[in-house]
Length: 362
Image (cartoon, rainbow, N blue to C red; front, side, top):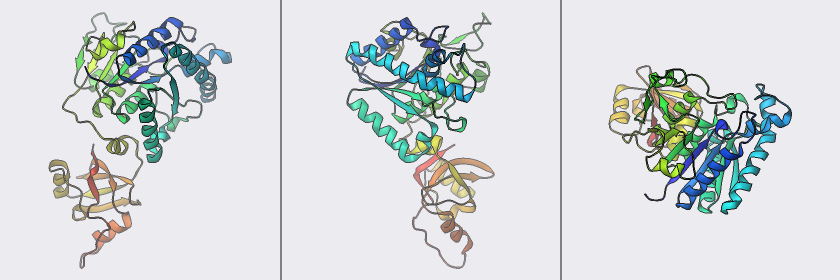
């Protein structure tokens, strides 16, 4: 087993006790396992929940706050407590953690997305342990990831991880809720996350965390679409992460080897970019880009909707169905001239409307 890049997601319920305080035994178990993974030579990125859970008791709340201001205040207190606890424990292993707080806008803005990637690569190269959390202190609803499960999936894709390990309080995925159905069957391996599996995973598993099994399955579905294998399960001991990447974990492995790894540019287009318009194409253009891997040329464009500039992302529509998204090489005004001027040629600044390397199929 060679050197791997591994993203480990630790949920609130895996870090805290019933009183919403950081549980010393749970916390130490995670730290020991991460240190062991690093000792084996692997690169590790941690996506850690627990900031709100660690902070709300300090504010006098009896349970996790439900208001936005309450959550953000708890996060403001808890983020400091959480990273302080990590730094203290990892000091025993001569490991230096780095706190990274992200919001959706860090992914949707291309420059910040690129900077986040470069920062993470620099930290890994310097043997620093990145500990990532959503910046709950300043996030508003439309700028959130929903939960740290999805954040961990997007981070694993961004850094082209070899594994995403989602640690939870249940040992894998079942076809029904094992807490209420003793006949529930556990899946040891899955190639994909189906709608039936998602339907069976309704509900949240903890009053302390925000995500339940369904959020973990949605995250796994996203990570797998980015070419990252996923493990969801429950393990203990300093060897737990080593056992998981060896295929010996008590949980569910999710991987589809037929899905290709998506490069960073295409990930941004597919999952994070803002769509500014639509381009409607003919049947010939659809076959060229879907079946032959060609770029979209001006001749295949029938209609344009929206006002976009060179470098913007648009949806591509064929036969009233969106078939993909891509980064345009020209503005909508330029493209309209190609459609309207039939009696004489109009030359675009680029030969392609969307180059095949800036295209993602949906």
